[in-house]
Image: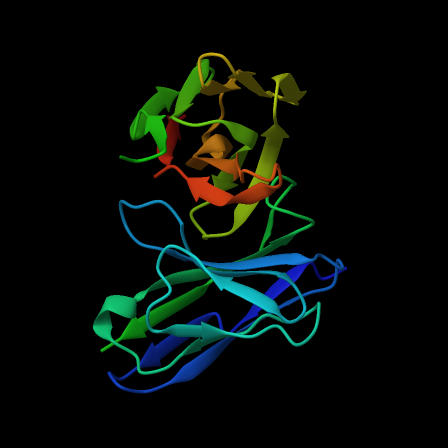
Length: 112
Length: 113
């Protein structure tokens, strides 16, 4: 099993550009989530999904969109990148939030 | 108010020392997680517990539900234990199902040889 995979590992965007961060898991987990990690702050939930076709907002959803068309994939879209979105992004999956979490390797995004 | 508080924020120890990292939370939880993040950035789940104590090698995690407090202990610490240790809790919805995780800000541990 590959576990949770994320692409790309690094990305530099100019302000106003859009892009999609990819996340996939092969463990048949229903619950998937996207977090951002900023210096001095804990991981903050952006969006999450409890199954295919079901998504909801987390703590910091503004500027991001998600969709869940399959159990395996949970892409995160930045609609119009801003410098405040410079961060490290992690995707995670699990059977539910009360169970062991599996994290992807992260994507380091810089918006100039 | 942050729902999950970790202490200390930074900890430096000598190789071989016994290490304790603390986590306090303010509401009822369905589970508490301890995670490890190495300098390369990857995050790994160490423990998930809702009561009592769990042990894995030199790592021990305990939780006191009444006091809303958990500790992560590392015995005979080694430089390879240097990492950020993160506490996270999953809270209950009123329906009884688990809600998404809330994270502490992490403890940076450095173990010197």
